[in-house]
Length: 193
Image (cartoon, rainbow, N blue to C red; front, side, top):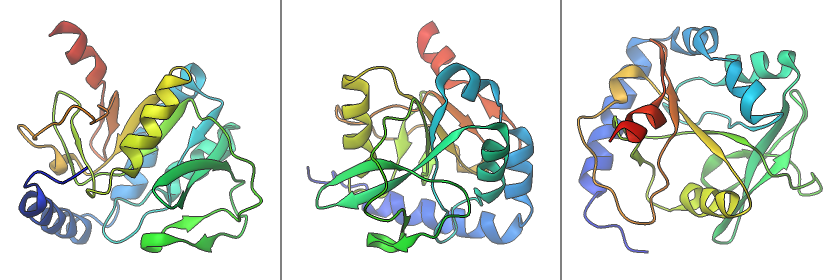
């Protein structure tokens, strides 16, 4: 699917996130402290996490917290145009995949997470998530939703929130966002609309 003119918005939001990452070196620790474990209780036990790349908010503290809580972790793997989630135990060696992603080895079993933590460039109050434009997460999340409920939680800096983002029919909305400043249940706002 073609990107509909969002390239300049992505560049702007990437620059904003770069500045936030430099200005808030403790944000990852704050994010971990604010992450609500009730999401694991409700939508786990399998939780898809991701290793941060570039200026993405540091997820290592959240991953450690989830591991200590007993969540069964999974990481994304990209093959061709598809992204799938594979079982992973914190501390197990990873390999470098496409786009610099840290992925489990190819023999790691594929799993169906009930809670998916997703990276982003920006989000809005309606749950619109602006990703990197390749559509991997949206396609993978659509498949998970076809097979049952998948609860999607974005991890971000608070100042990555935008007033409004362009949305397309294939975009899968976020249900929740956790930032270094707090936790935002976006699905409640959609339910009221």
